[in-house]
Length: 255
Ligand code: ADP
Ligand code: MG
Image (cartoon, rainbow, N blue to C red; front, side):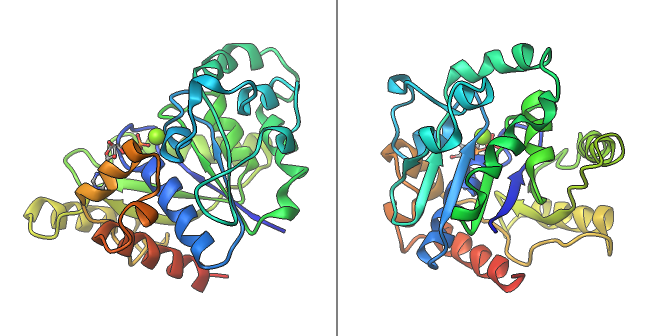
């Protein structure tokens, strides 16, 4: 049965989508079958895989509105064994519409139940908020990866995220442990990056797994989406590609 992992942090720009796209591509190169579910109305993961968001008839929004099953909206992405459940701006309506549905927090979980056996890994690219879409991602997931940008205020909002995860566990009986904290946009030359790393280590300490692999700031990672490709196919030799391959290996070690 596939492992469902949300990539979550309500802070924008910390590398969630970059991680969803490149980690999934790396795992598919390592012969795992992987699905990425784009749960962000901005549809950046969708674009990142070269899919034109504006031309989609059905998206993850169609699934959440119960007008299609997940199987109907899944598209093949860039690499063999890599698939995408796309999203676009239509998903922004879901926050309000779904809140009146009974069991609204578990709609994604139900939908994933139909396809989970077909994949080894399912990554959910969460939006930059702690609303209903993120709640659906948390309830659907077996665990979460939290990317943290090695910048000032890296841990700002972390208490809110952890509180939300606790509430989901207590009120919805849906525990969602941390698979790992991922330090992103890391520049080993700067003192700031090293300070942030120490701060993250102090905050999560012995309690949680902090991935050994850190994702460096790498311009190829930033360029790849405009070519509609994961960095792994856009520039296989880049340090960004190397980092996500290492992270994928670290995740396989946890199997
Ligand atoms: P989020 O999904 O958390 O909002 P993104 O993955 O979209 O964050 O990243 C925000 C911006 O930073 C994007 O323009 C992306 O291309 C860029 N970016 C992300 N990770 C890296 C990295 N390791 N090196 C360079 N640029 C990066
Ligand atoms: Mg994103």
